[in-house]
Length: 255
Length: 245
Image (cartoon, rainbow over all chains, first blue to last red; front, side):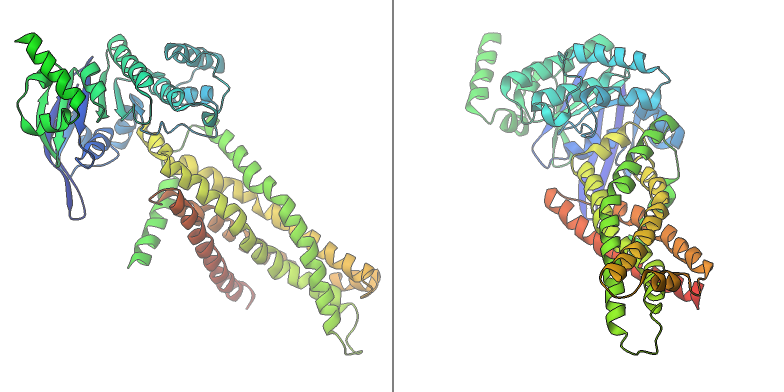
């Protein structure tokens, strides 16, 4: 479980996060949504320890990140998996080497053990037979799946995804969403996803945190987001006619 | 003020580069890859330039000696001194700032732009140690490149002198052997080690701390070349003053 308590983050005069608190539970897929510039990425980078908040704290299963020593932080980060918006695969390595990378860095497994594990997770993300391709030879959807495989290869306790669906066609986006959801359930990990893809919200948002102008404007789930009358949320989530209709139908059915 | 900030950040980067070392089995692979990219990959261009610039130094020296009282072997002497003291360590380092420096800045800069450095950091890896330290170790073999440049520079000079009709082989060899001071070789290699450190770290600094996209990677490579060259020229002056005066 990750508890975020009143975090603030500024860059120069720009106050990006203005006191955000949230709890992300184990075994659940949580989504952080909001418009571009609302502070989602900064928030996620604070969770990852890439940015240090000036105020507030982030607690990982009872351990306050700011109080950890360098070694303890390194150990904690080894338990994190991250899927970057652009996949961030190492372009000098093959797909298999990318997936094996965390194992090479943090375990003492033999080469064959690492290859077996890489085969297993690549199979898990439906990428058998792509081991020896370079990332540049893979499509956007394949790269995302490789990034997921790399993120889960070391059995992480926490999985973070920054807009995992950006640049993907709707069908592949759903495949990626379902994959993340299944992996979260299967390995019982704490998953936090940054997104502004409303399909993802409706599909896998077991918990949703809505950010606006560096503040938490709303918190709920994919069920409650249909019912909310919070104007800030409805303006954003139901900005398209399609989603307006979907919401109307949902409300009509449940009245 | 920005210059002072950059100088401070550069020294902090160097300190950080030696902290939290990467697992040796991984580091060994990275070092071997960087030796291949930075050292072996530079041998061709270094050999080509050294041979022909050595020849040009010889021809120009020979053409400028019109006084019959000046001995013919002076051409070989002047070529040796020019090549060993300045051409090989300094001139080749400036060329390497363009070749190797741009490669380092653009490869690290691209990793920054595509979030690969963030990926390393998230995994708990000291990205500076992972990316810069192997380049620093690989470039400790840079004196090997400079030795080849020295040898081929003198060989190019000798070839130009003999086959260009500017002197005899005996005169050139006598000139190369005249008043040889072994400390000059030590001086040249001290400079080479210092320049190797500069070649590994300044381009890495500009790549690692770059911000922006593909256009900025290009700009960072240019800036890195300019500052690497400036620092090499300044240190060349300081080291020459300290070691030879």
